[in-house]
Length: 310
Ligand code: AMP
Image 1 (spheres, helix red, strand yellow):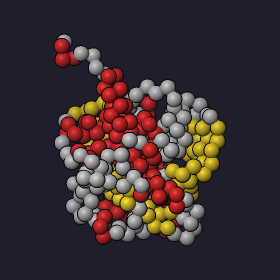
Image 2: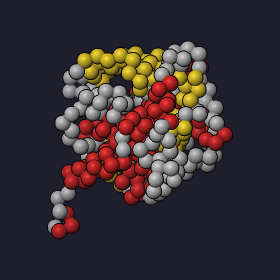
Image 3: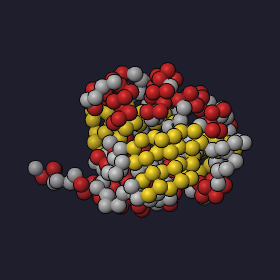
């Protein structure tokens, strides 16, 4: 199936400038944002429709490179003012990260208005942004088949009420282990998952950075291992790329079965593994299906121990 024939995906999230303090050095004004990473990632598999707001300082060239990859940017509003900004500092091992600054800027007054053509999108990715905006977008979509949402500590701490309302409206939540612990108030990851599932979503994905990701649903627990990369440069956007790869794979396959979810986990892990190999969205912006197939094969080989002959 070609990307053009696959189901379209609606992505909402931030489009941003990031200031990144990495062990390799500091880089400012890197084009990032959850919608940027997720859209580039998902567009490897299926056409994308993106909803976001940018300020008058956001580069048109980024929007052009999105359009060149079957990403419809009609839903990106250009508002007077400054684009969303985020600054983060990574620990020397690149595993931990501290948010230094978050400036909502044009997102503070943004009210998403979906272009009419977007309202019939079957797969929706509510990328990391204010949960009220995620709900607002969801209200405007007619009977989606799959709704996946991402969030982060900033909203878990700052917007618990709208996040609780969101959890009741989504099928799948994608968060990292730290966020799962914070959201549930429970340290043990399996118990934390059970608690989060009790609050609404029927499926929970917990990302564990270099250690891969876990899927909790009615069919049990599935683990996708992280691929041990030699070259990790910048983990920013890995989570968003994971979420984009997850919905992208499902849209491309046109299947939402339990097994398709497990395959999507492996494809999502492969997608995220490319993201971290370059600063910002540079690598994920030129990701090909061939890249994904190659990395999926490497991931499969990680746990091939001839189990069928035992
Ligand atoms: P990730 O590394 O996958 O968690 O995503 C990092 C991206 O999320 C960066 O490009 C930031 O611009 C964006 N981001 C950081 N904080 C927020 C926030 N509170 N809301 C929306 N996007 C954010």
